[in-house]
Length: 585
Image (cartoon, rainbow, N blue to C red; front, side, top):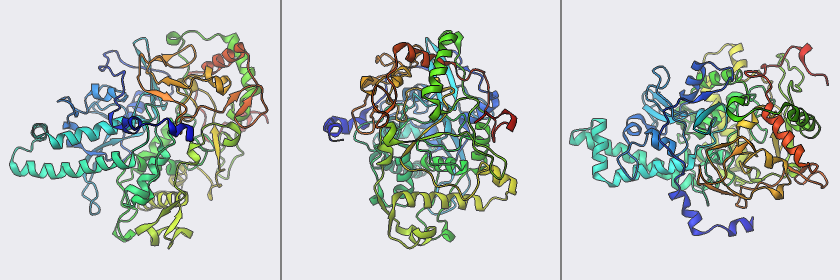
């Protein structure tokens, strides 16, 4: 840790203010290529732009805001691509504005509590981080439910702040905004300015307090845990003392097989899908009331979109992992892949599981779930930042007398416990107003049995690897550029590399040359380690998970990972296949 922190200079601390990802280009005319992942066109169009309830900015301001350094609109395709959002054409049913994947319009009614949001807003949705695009020789291959491997959320929000601050300080810029919105009279412009100042203050405070880090995360990575916890325990309840520095950037996980898996999240800490999905929405700027004095005055109320969060979960349950497109990336050597499969079964399948998967025993609802490996961090040896990210204790403030269970009435409680208590109470409040049948409630909770088991501590989840080829960079923190380097001794991995936007179908990962992306990832910085998951001639444990592989064995494993799933559009059955189809134990 000391070595990593010594590398930080003043320039590193200020880099977040200036970073602007390279590799941007004008929106290409050629349509994106979609692989067979079992979704219809309507499925992916809805998923790309449905509203989770996020309210980053009022709709009229976002639609008419200019970038900081010119008159180009912030929402333009060119600016969206500059920060790695996936641009797409408008469609009248789900995306009439032509937003990039991951932005959506949220329509709110009247203000439900003092200071709450109302009217139309623009915010983030699942596809901003959980939709991938692989660029290769001028082709764009969309990976539905994949990893947002190009989106730099930190730089994007920084640019949004700069655009708003520039509009406040430049009278001509503000006048152009007012003209586009239709605020033509002095009174209308005054009202707009007051409203704009309030929004700009929120964005600036988030960017300069909550989002500040000693060095930028770069594309494809964000400290999701740190940001969600900070928003729930610091920003929304106005308790700045609870802030934790978000020092554990991770890449977004892919979503196929997530509803079918026994545990989700990188640390294997969630089972209930609506809890997982609403918590993610809380992090991406859903409006939540955590400042009222009591639930009767609106405390724990939110604009949670439970119906669509349930719909997206059900839709993800029929999402197939993507199959390697041989016509684009080259033929698979089937003999080599066969040899790689034998190696995978020997060295990898005990953690990662392999089709047709090993399943849990049926629960009282008759549902089985895909077993996932829960490997102690002390064994696998990958970056431990996720387990050290948060301050140990947090103030409860005005939440004190309305917290659940043993948290109630206490001034200071463990940060993790407060986070769980607050997020669970927000969820319960959102669900309490809905009229749902027993079957609808079971579906909402993914047919999980309550009380839920306590998650293991200090473990990383190892899920099946079908479709993993389409999700670079690798490891939970995106610190390994390709699959080949996942199979070498950790000390031999590239320690600094550029996160490119061009796909490398040979080593199966990202272009690291700097030609298609200029963010340099330094694995010696805090949270960026690419240690662990090492194949070498050493005793197992402490980061060593397998023997030293010959080079031909590594390439055989890469070929096998390219070859799965072996069937295009193969959906893992939710709840498990019929008993006669289950693999023998």
